[in-house]
Image (cartoon, rainbow, N blue to C red; front, top):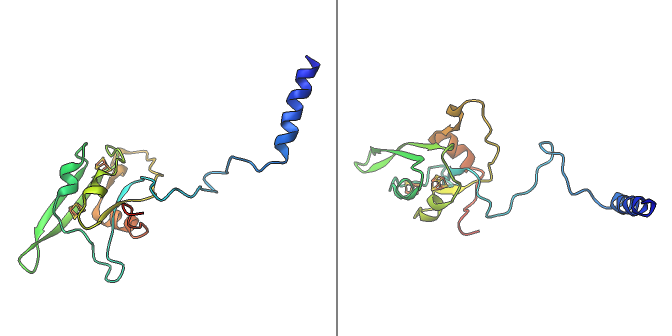
Length: 143
Ligand code: SF4
Ligand code: SF4
């Protein structure tokens, strides 16, 4: 019994000299790996700031939970362009299929994971919000 106590103290003393494995979240946050799949986000051309999305609709089609909603509108050149783009993050599985299928890497998996909200409406992200998150997101698929 006393021997077991000493064994326990020995383990504690050994641990005292090591770096802690825990961090003080949310003040300290871990760096996520390159392929971490957070919230899908819309990327823009870093030179012009224009959205890369060509409104092909592939991401919305492949999404297994139908949480992407796209509105396509006629462009000034008589072509078509992206109107609104909605992500219902409450249904998103973070599977990354939308990012994999996008032909122009316009949608990428960001490192955003702090999504807790009081109201479900807070889990609906618009094109502007997704573009804002996407502006800090690299080309996820090739990294
Ligand atoms: S990550 Fe998966 S579930 Fe989420 S929007 Fe993309 S395809 Fe849909
Ligand atoms: S994000 Fe990519 S896959 Fe989705 S509509 Fe735009 S270009 Fe197509």
